[in-house]
Structure formats: C-alpha cells, structure tokens
Length: 342
Image 1 (cartoon, rainbow, N blue to C red):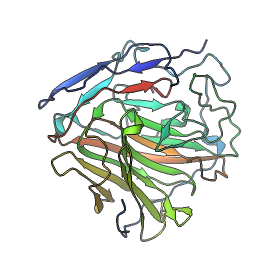
Image 2: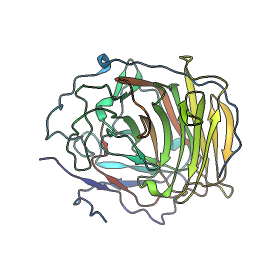
Image 3: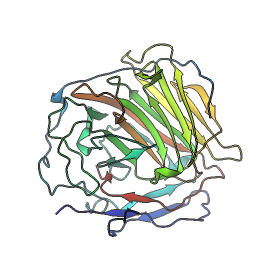
C-alpha cells in the first residue's frame, strides 16, 4: 500500500530568535489533508550552457514499476535525525558551503519527489528523486522531455507512480530553514532552451510569496538563454523582470546565480550574476519568515520539451545567513510525498 504522509512542522509562531538559537521542528504522521512592479531592464554578463541529451544518462531505478515504492521520509533511516530541519537565523555561523564531493548529505538536503507548484506553474511530470544524482563530485539535475521513454517516474499527490516519466523534473531543497542571507549556486546552468534552472527562496506554503532567479528568461514570447529572470513576490503582487544578457548562455563555462535577502527596516533583495550586482528589488517582497533554498531544473508547463533528457550540473552552493532583525520562524507544512530524503 502506498504510504501517505503529511509532515507537519512544529508551530514556531512568535518565537523571538536570539543570536545563535536553533529551533527544532520535529515530524509526525497525520491523516491526509481535506480538500477544502516593474524594474528597468538591465544588461548583464553571459551565463553558460551545457546540454546532455541522451537516455544513457539514466541510472538504474530499483523501484521502477513497483506500485508500493515511495520516497524515504525523515525518520526512515535511524542514522538521520527524525526532524525536518531547524530554523537557522543566528548569523553566518549557521550557514553552510556545499561542494557535493561527499555526495548529497541527508542531514542537509531533501529531494523533491512528487507534485510541486511554484507561482502557479508546475512540472507536468512532477519531480522525481531519480533525476537527482551526484556524479564525479557534481550535482546532476536531469529533466525529461517529451521524447523520454525510460523508467524514471514521479508520483501523484497520493504517492502513486505516474504512468510516464515525460517532463519529470529535479530539485534539491535545504532541510533547514533560513532567513536573511546570501543564497548562491555555481555551475553549468543551462540546458535545452525550454529547460529552466532556478534558485528559489520559499516557505513550504508557496502562497505567501517567494524570491527566485532563473534562466532562461524571455525574449518577447520566446524563452532564451540570452535573458535571465528575477522576481520577488508576496501574496498578491509580483515584481518581475526579464533582463538581457550580453550574449547567449551557451559558452559551456561555470557561472554564478546569487541573491541577497535583507530583512532590515529597509528590506530588499539584490540580484547578482557572476559576482556582479544586476538589480535590487524593494517591492512585492515575501514575508520575513524563514524559508528553504530550492535548486531546481524543470520544464515549466507552458514550455516545449522536444528532447529526451537534458542535464544541469551544479558545482557548489552556499547559504550565509545575515541574522537581520526582521528574521522570524513561523509554522509551516510539508505535504508528503513532495519532499523526501536523498
């Protein structure tokens, strides 16, 4: 029988988080839930491109075709603490640097496995944990297109494997929650023109808003690696910009996407590409409440996916908390099976 779980974070509303405090959010099983501005365009330096379009990238999936298979959840492995993470708001000492040389640390990362919606967009084939691998010391995020016929599958909201792996996506998510800070990823950050690579800062409930920086952006109606998208949004409005790069993102080099989130009296988000500040948003900011960093590769539902398999390679990532005065921890929810252990 497919195991259904809703992982509910402990309520942290109103906690005054002092320097260095760590708040534990433990998990428990409960029944399934009841249904119930504009910025001027800026020029920017080139990012990069790297495409692998071959089914040979696939790894063997021991759970393929098994209707009882499910993603491992926190607490399944006795060596991993039965928590969904902690709220880290104390300062830079609560951050981390990850180069993936030792694999994907289950005490630091979760893997997306199941249906995920972000800003009312989704991957039609869901997120599949088999699309996330560490190879030769780099994180590989694989995206399956409409030509894919392999065994990798995501699952639906009840945990049942989907009929096809087409348009399945990949993402890793920090197990811990962070507030103000620097969020950065470096690697080969482009694939097929329809494959979007993004870093998101978002609470488990997406409705309150988020921060995201992604490639490709749009040149008119077309997605183009000559453009990068940056966006802040709250519960009702968004500050959304596609800004032009100096050339296309197909140079095959290693590049950096970064944003700095400030929760001071003058809250703002600064967006960076390759260590150069590109723009700053002070409008449509998300709540000043701890969220997670998502590292994502997907084909948005409205994009063409005329390929088999594409791959994004990530060399390193880091989070450096600022410990700003506006940082808070509040309650949140994780709905299994959308996130799992590596």
